[in-house]
Every structure is written in structure tokens, then in C-alpha cells.
Image (tube, rainbow, N blue to C red; front, top):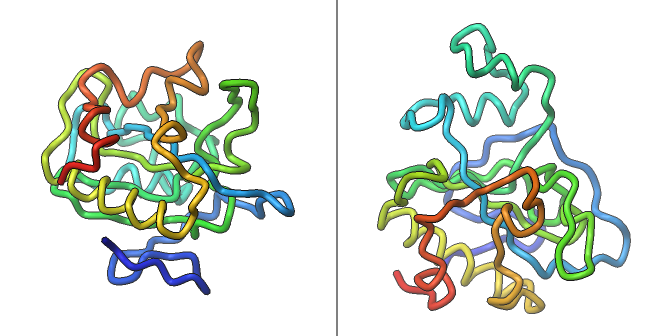
Length: 183
């Protein structure tokens, strides 16, 4: 399990790269949900810093034609997990990252308010790596220990809360492996 510093709401001993795209959560909110996403920029290309640049509002949209549609987007995630399992935190867990967008599921809405967003480097049509699952499951175990209202039923995909807009983490994501906490 990874250690979370309760004062800073950050994982210890991992890279922290600040995203400006967050704000305060509503008062008296209980963090009880984890949203799994996927992203790669350009889609299907890995091992570059375009995703981090995007979450920091520094993406040079002239680098690739597919980046043009991302101009002026202000989004973030609490965590980004690379293909090699490296975890990068961009927003403290006690803050509201801008990852869910317009969202609704099981009678609840505004998922940014009470969820933690985790981006996996990947696409909806590709498999994730063993190292990503190991890192993800370690993070989930740590988050569950700190935020005891997080249950397996509240670990869901972006596709669940925004089905008309989003398909991530995709058909190749192994939900069973995550719900079982397999490393």
C-alpha cells in the first residue's frame, strides 16, 4: 500500500506535478467514489509528456492536428498512471479535480464533487499493462484506507457517469482484476 500524507492529501514518494485545474470541494462532502479514465496524446502514443502538458494548460496544440480540438480545455485528474506503472499526482485528493465533466449515475450528479479521478495512459481499444494494474490497485487500497466510504461499487468508469459522451476506460479494462485488488 502507498502512503497518503493526510495533511497535504498527496501520495508520498511519487512525482507531484501541479495542475491549475482544480478548486475546493463543497463543504461537508464525503469522498466516496473513484472514477477510472484513460488518455493518451496523440491517441495511442505513449511515453511522452503531452498528457501532463494538457493537464497543466501547456499543451502546444500546433504539435499534432488532433490537439486542435483540445485548445482552451481546462481539465485535470488527481492521478495519471503511465504504461510502466509510474504514478504522477496532479491534484491533492482533498481538492476537486476537473475530470468528470457533466456527470450522472445512480441518482447522483456532479461527480467531481465527491470523486477521485485516475487517468490510465491508454485508449479505449487497447489493453492496459500489468504494471498499471499493480499501481492502480495499490492506489485504490490506499484511498480506501483513508476514505472509508469508497467501496468496490463506487469504483466506476467515466463511461458510467457520462455514457453519452465517454467510453473510457474501454472494453479491455479488467474490472474483475481491479475489484479483486489483484496485483
